[in-house]
Length: 112
Length: 115
Figure 1 (cartoon, each protein chain N blue to C red):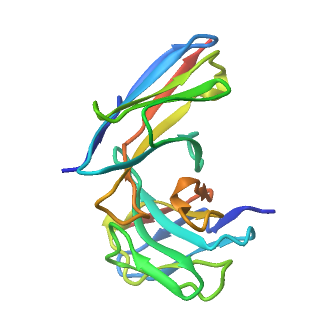
Figure 2 (spheres, chains in turn purple, yellow):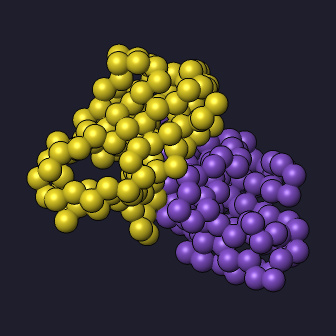
């Protein structure tokens, strides 16, 4: 079957580094996405990985290991505005090209 | 550009009532979609459209209708609301024509409660 697991909630300190993990099970992997969603707001696109390795975008990096069904989102130099939910989503090659399997999200709380 | 806009922001319906959630974008995006987001669950795709006059079902289409008469607008109709349709509804669009899922822009959402 298809499944995505991510921790429900994490807490980190301003200025620190945090890693949010996402594990997935699909019959045919075809890309993994990370979105950020502030409370009461719309999700916004952060990153896309389809090949193994690390993709860096400023303070945010996303890593993918297809053999392990595993990804993480790394946030450096945490700021209070990074308090949000982080959504992991996977596209399965067997599904419609327009459909993603979404995780329930990880709520990240940043403390001063 | 206003981006993706959705109206209303909040709505309370009684069971059996019908209503239309509005979604519009002014970015000339061909691809538009509707999702629902429920607590403790991931986003789920309801319907999507790859251009004016073309719509298709997503993962959870039952109880919802859509149409796409213009590039700008993609309304979602609830024909007979049920409490199970209490949710936050997001509309999204994408400028990418070959693979629109690669980068979607979401509207601010409509919070719907069905009593």
